[in-house]
Length: 467
Image (cartoon, rainbow, N blue to C red):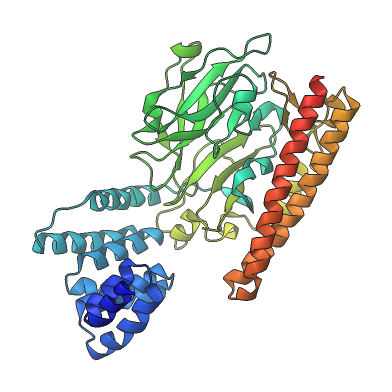
């Protein structure tokens, strides 16, 4: 009540500032529209109107008042316009607004903040990346639950296995990996790679050799330098045993996590050396989080995940055709920015190619012998905690364990349907139908219950198989 009274007694700009700081952007817009109409050159009124429209996601409407405020020397207006330009992949426009931001700070005798330096670096990185956007064919995109996104990576046996984070402790390699990361084991099951936090709270990549008896040797940090001042996660080792893809959010990232590639020497264990990581560039990376690059040479397909589409609780997994040699999009291509940010995967595709048929025939599954099979066959990777991975119901020796796994697979099917229905509800909500909000909350509870049930059934299958 005191806060409301103080806002009511303040002037319009002070009211707007208080409401903006409180996050009540709709109220700011309502108060500032008439002020801007009366005083169209008022820098502060235009700033609070534009900044609130930006916060509400009304980007087109936000531009004019923010540009007016920028012209009146409001530094924060230039800051937001620079961020908007970066999100549009317009490096030139971003640089223009960064210059205006710098001028406003100089005029007001304020120092350049860490955010200013960060956004300035991002603009330079964006410009450099746009000069070398790789030509790739993205043949599918799948919006999936962020907690289990790696389950849609249909790798052949030769590409190794992606394992859930708790596999690290169940395999006897110490504490769990980061709950948002994924562990990796090559086809020969000679080592395990994962990400875990160190004493500073940053995530490092760890590795451990798997001995002949299935036990795990002591773990070591792969290389502190792979973090590049941030955290490193999501390792994937190519079959050559040398090329490592991973993600970090360090100083050479465009924003959030970016995908990097490094190569390692042929030394054993702790003797391996990792070379300077290289950002793989666009369209793989974006100002958002991009991670878990996996390339399957046997099927000729690759995958990576990203939250660039900003779908709550979801990430998008892109399936693409890797190239043997990098070829970049021509810098004068009118669709360069759209290709770089993957506004439509159709822009990356060739005319007359049946990509649906390519997906149907190239996506691998596994049979009980570890040989690729039809993608229509049920596929799973169940870590048994002793260095073994089960890929087929035929791997089970215990009938009760096999039955428990069947129940888990049935629950998985129910979960997929539940998530599909839930996504349809979310789409209705995004399109303005607020009547489905209660249904979404109920669906989220059912989704959580199904996840817990599937995990319990999997754990039960492992326990029964070990009896």
